[in-house]
Amino acid sequence: MEFSTADYSIFVLLLVLSAAIGLFYALSGGRQRTVQEFLLANRSMGFLPVALSLLATFQSAVAILGVPSEIYRFGTEYWFLGCSYFLGLLIPAHVFIPVFYRLQITSTYEYLELRFNKTVRIFGTVTFIFQMVIYMGVVLYAPALALNAVTGFDLWSAVLTIGLVCTLYTTLGGLKAVIWTDVFQTLVMFAGQLAVIVVGAQRMGGMARVWHLAEQQGKISGIDLNPDPYVRYTFWTLAFGGVFMMLSLYGVNQAQVQRYLSSRSERQAVLSCYAVFPCQQIVLCLSCLTGLVMFVYDREHPLAPSGTHRTPDQLVLYFVMDVLQDLPGLPGLFVACLFSGSLSTISSAFNSLATVTMEDLVRPHFPGLSESRATLLSKLLAFGYGLLCLGMAYVSSMLGPVLQAAISIFGMVGGPLLGLFCLGMFFPCANPTGAVVGLLAGLAMAFWVGIGSLVSNMGRATPLANSTVPPPINLTTPAVLATTLLTTTTPPPSPTGLQKFYNLSYMWYSAHNSTTVIAVGLLVSLLTGPTPPSAVDPRTIFPVLPRLLCCLPARYRQRLCCGVRFPTQDAPHPSPTAEKRVPNGVGAVPRDEAEEQGYGPPAYALQETAF
Image (cartoon, rainbow, N blue to C red; front, top):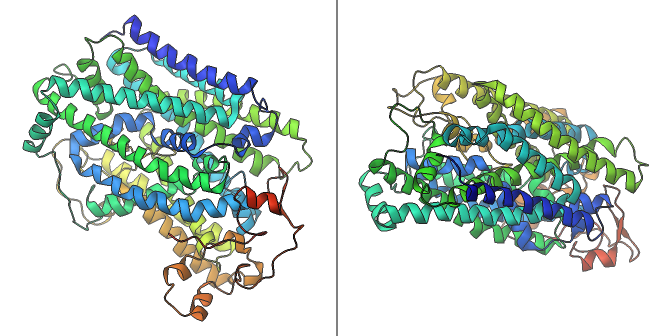
């Protein structure tokens, strides 16, 4: 179908308002004249905009297209992923946020230098940059490609417009503009999905009839307690494997941690984690209901013309354009919803990449860099990554079948990075050598299983119904890669041996790879000599084992800390004039001021935080 003037108007309005928000924050307040204002919004944000920004980063365009297709193909079992959101957000709120926020860092990878050394920090930073550079072009190009195939919407006009507008407001307005445009784009995403569900259900006779027909067709799933990790979706896979995936997104991902650190206090950062929980459940419900309505609608009104090859990511667009074709403006609203997902994800990528490049690669080599020059360089880095994103989108257009592998890389890297941070935060005995070797082992395992699964599935005439190629997580998001690029027919016989290992459900990838990093890292650390307790900064440790085993006598719990003494236990308090130094060079926070801002008790003391 062709877009009407109203559709184009709504799409253009989205771009104009997004750019206007960036210009507003470029010309108001401090006008982005300091690094802290540009990269951390002056640490002044409240919990609600931060929560909606966290949600927008999570909800990419690939998820908007992918999750309904998963429900269409495999039923509502995917809905149980919502069970993982509880621990997946509770743990970051009470473990990762207190440690990161009280260290007053800007880049997540500054933590790795404080805990280990500069080498580990560089390894983590380079891994993250590799992950994001590969992904950001794909997340811009893939939805535009699907939209072009279904609607005839000009491919490169969409890519260039979205990329340039996103680069504009990210470069001019900094993190504050990114967060507030995320808030606006989240509302657009809600409106677009809700419009599709309401109109589609109405045309099918109501949601009750949709649910009844879907249940008759076996699409309403019960709780599958099968513990087999090779089954694509079971309760255990989604509820527990999903926790590790959530931790890799909301616990240690630079794009998300940067939003926590932009909060005006630690309490606001924790509240943002709590506030995003119901929002995520609503988004999951909307996506799943879209999938059910689409399935029932396709039974009575086939979505694609006969003889047309349909890929799963195109199903949603065929459905939307068919259902909304008589309602001018609503197709444009959904396209705005789709590209809001792209804008929010890409802007987060630009800002987080500029941050880690500035703080981890530039500042350490130019410690005397003035504030004005550092701010200008940060803006130039954001602009440069914006242009690089357009270049990567062009590269993505030339990849063909390799595009699937390019998207897979994002999912492969998240687990090992989570394992690296957990190794440092939970195991005081881990040393830098163990951290580097563990990270490399985790990446090797991730690429082995991920690419092995990819090649194995491509080598078959028909892919497995429970294909386990890892999803294109939006900084994160659990939209399934197989949903985006593979079609499903009758599954072949179950594989055996190494082929079965390659068929591990992608929901366990983060757990499998992060566990590999921890196990190898601990083994190498013990073989090469554990880190002496006196060399461990207690601010960088969260004593998880003593907390979990709190019923043990105190002397045994102290042994679990590997000899590390926390200031709250036996160290003398610092003098009232002590200052809390900020590793990123932004400045020093006096002790009294730090307590007022919620940074915690006197200098370096890491308070116990109960779940």
